[in-house]
Image (cartoon, rainbow, N blue to C red; front, top):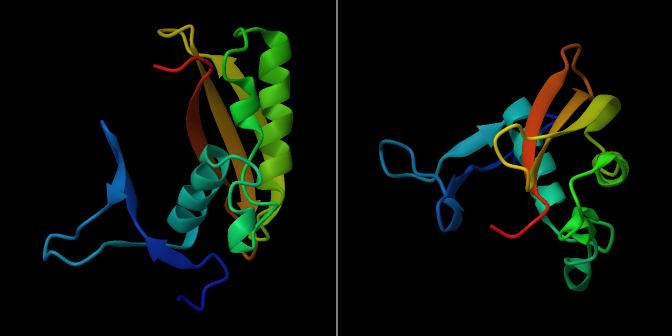
Length: 139
């Protein structure tokens, strides 16, 4: 583990059929550090159902975004998504402040919303911006 307050972890890459660990050019497992690690961690937290890791000792890890699957892409749903993201991201102790969260419909896919999250990590003076696509319908 890194001694940095933002830490390091194995890098995860998204592929067509799911996610996998990334390999470096020399065949070792790739690592993400600092802000990249925090960004990856926030995305993983949002993808995980709240309480899903309770049996592993993390009952408050995850988000409630899954509750919105099947809901219409309207203002009410987008406001709920915003609230669920805020609730989830604030549980990460590496986030000093949430600067902004916006949820907007994707212009090319009506089933999807794009969630823009801007946070100030602890120990940093530069904000971190994360864009997270979320599908309201199973694709």
